[in-house]
Image (cartoon, rainbow, N blue to C red):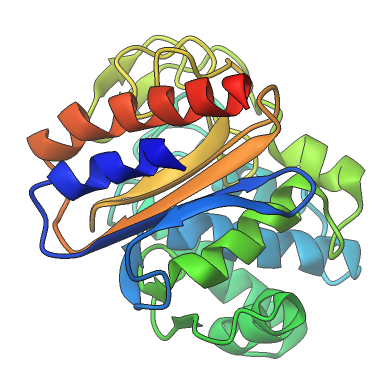
Length: 272
């Protein structure tokens, strides 16, 4: 896709990207798509998918207690448990605020490990990575941020999100549906959002502004970005997903570069 050539102008050392349609075909790619990059918080959607596999396998329930008192697995997945960003400390009652929490995803990993008697990195590998053929992807550490992957592997995950094989499509639909609508909170890098909407492990665009996706992205767009200069979005209305990985930490350059790329990708898809 010609639109992906915008990456040539990004102020990064290395970057790669690809677009995958809802039918699983790759519409285009750019850069070293087999090169491993740290995912940072783009690890979270992979971890969330493993949690949902554990739910469908009957190892856990979404509304069982997990995290601080009164919190559930669903609260942890949707950043509404009340846990602080990076501390195992409650800052608000569950379901009252959207507090983006790495600690919450660590709590999820611990919860799944206890329920399945399998260390979470191993469970993620067995439940998600191996079945999808993501052989160059690892998560040795925190389920909040320690994933390493390639664009080639993340394309497989993006295809799964659009046409699920590991999960019931109804579960994936629930994951991309807002949990506790109307909660305000801080979207890291973009400030306070009146409606900081999240599903089960996935941020939902809705009417957020400013945002890291494009001005033409549909409100139903969902995904995640990472502080290592990475993102994955799925736009159900466009019938496509895009993944981009880089080796420069998120900052003003990304705020400036990412939305035009997304808008160009969506425009090219519409004109195809």
